[in-house]
Image (cartoon, rainbow, N blue to C red; front, top):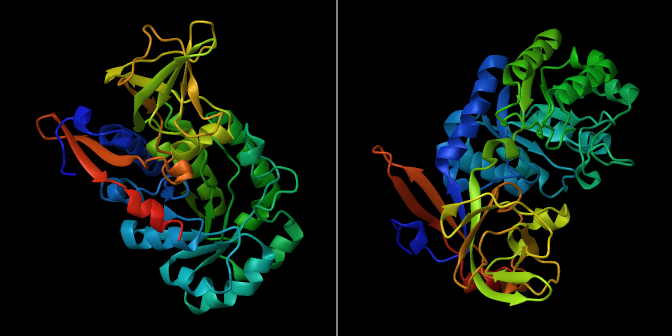
Length: 389
């Protein structure tokens, strides 16, 4: 498909990436780094749409990964610093990981002992993930410090015993944490537990999950706290923002294919939460409805006799985008845009039911302030078929 001038001309479904909104987030990330001295690495587990990496690269210091495929993508398409982490590396992939990594972080003592010599031989600095056994997470499924967690080591005596093998550590224990006070208290607890370890390191990654792009978040307080931490232990601080980089910068645009009534008004769109916004299903959340027929809106998520339930087109009975109190009823052919559709969506999209994979569309502004539209990527039957055999 050629690049089109009007979003309304592009067949749905498609993910819409709005570069001006993306830049607003990235500028805030950049400001935090400038004020604090921290370095920011894009968390590819959240967002890995490399077609816009050129636009993101000036604001960030590199990428952090969760697998061989991600560390390779970060090295090849983003550049800068490329940090490699995985819950567990296989023997057959570790050499390839080290070929792409600027730092490698092991999840456990077993992994560290198995692969540290190869990393050191290649000159790749080695780190270890620590688990402080406390966290800021509302969801047990996303809580790194949940009971019996496999994510990182916590035994201080055993950690001190391997300090000669590592140059840094990674601690990730926040999930959508929008409270500076909660972060501050958590970091103080971490310092109380691991402070003597930090003094003997060169770098500490504090992971992601800090929602500092909220306009009301006290950015300068966070910057000062990070700078204080860095100076107290003589370490380079890293952050691993994912959602913070792309929050509110994209939509999933769909079309109503059918309407029904079964006790309430129902509408079916040409996309699916299981296939295209899987986190809604995992976390039992509702998609924000941000536009109807290209008109911006903010319809409340309300369950009432007069509300409308918007369903996806898969066969899953619970394939529900949300329930909305609409001013007018929906009609076949109406276009609905669901917001915040970049983080943990595009990286999780799948071919369930063979439902059409959304295209990727990039929206920007030219020098005159006029909107520009670029169809970055389309998907077709050949990719559905080739993904299965």
